[in-house]
Length: 532
Image 1 (tube, rainbow, N blue to C red):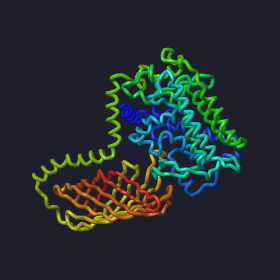
Image 2 (cartoon, rainbow, N blue to C red):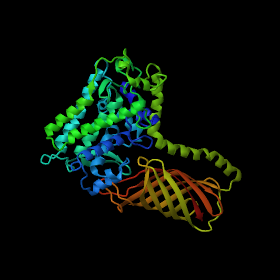
Image 3 (cartoon, rainbow, N blue to C red):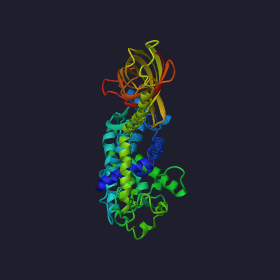
Image 4 (spheres, rainbow, N blue to C red):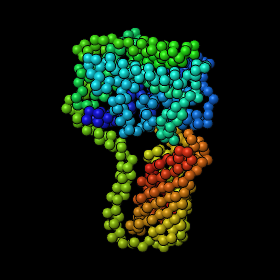
């Protein structure tokens, strides 16, 4: 029960606080700052300045270029190589595990996983006082050291003692347009990123002292805060959202961020030092971690955690992260509703739009009974043309389409369409050409009165990819299918009609070989038909 409530609370917190509260320094997303990415870029630039002939970029393969092109984060020109890309992707992986940064429903289970707390230097529910802090330090350090040992053993070439970018492993990653894929990336940089994420998180999830915040006094708590059994005496001090920020900081938090950056650089350089053997590098890594993971025992609830300066950043009213008691049950119930809303929002959008049309039916039926003109005027021509605009509310995108229609009678219409479907990445705030879709259309019209009709529309044809993606070059093509179960058509003139499809489902599949590429879209489409 405690785990379930924690997961629900975590998911809702991500919806409500731009992802920063749950993840310590936040990852780059549509509404969150790229704190971890900024630290990663600073780290690899510092390492390349220290060892310019060792950590430079290798030659890109075509797949590497596609990965970098679809990077779901900002990547500057000097870092557009597979090594830097992998390091940044690795540092994001602890938070995302291959999912979209906006997928709060799935990410709630990721961040609510007790076994994943060590990746963020956080307490599990079992890490209670008085020994909880020592347990967290040991678990987090062991996880970091194992990753770094693997990076050195498997990612450093035995002969040259340099990082081998051809030694690769698979990473589940969400790309800007391809979505969730498995990509082959250099082992050394992936494991380094995952390890240094935890190092950086220790500066927000752990209370620290010292000239450079090198000494840990107590480990903070996140997972128990959404549980109605949270007790600060037992579970340790709360994680404080204000410590997660990396922009517009006061002097104290700016200095702390600088220490997190320096710790990341120190550990990276210890693992990458070209003048050291693998055994020596592992020893150097442990020495770097010793420097930044010192522990001052004896800090307790009674001493206000050794009068921690972090206390000044708690919410003024004592609420927020530090919740407990019976009130949490009500909050958890609200959180549960928000998470369920996130899981069902796509289907609900279509349902609400359809309901709006159905609510109009009684009025339309009344109009038909009163006016009773269920005999539309004869066709002046069976042919008509149409133009439409649409937008996808699932995989973001736009639709610009035109087509022709032939009406066999008032109920059955067929035709052909061509549309341009540019795709949008919310993560990178960019757009690409998407697909060119060409398809046949069939419409079944259900006449309400001379002015108003409902209709069901189906599409079937081909989709052509207009830009190169990871594993799918431009120019490939495959099938296209679409369906609008219920749309609205309104006669606006003698030879013009307005139509609205509020729940138009489209499925372009422009690449079939290897791993098929599909881009399912839930669209809202409106347009005009001319003629007929």
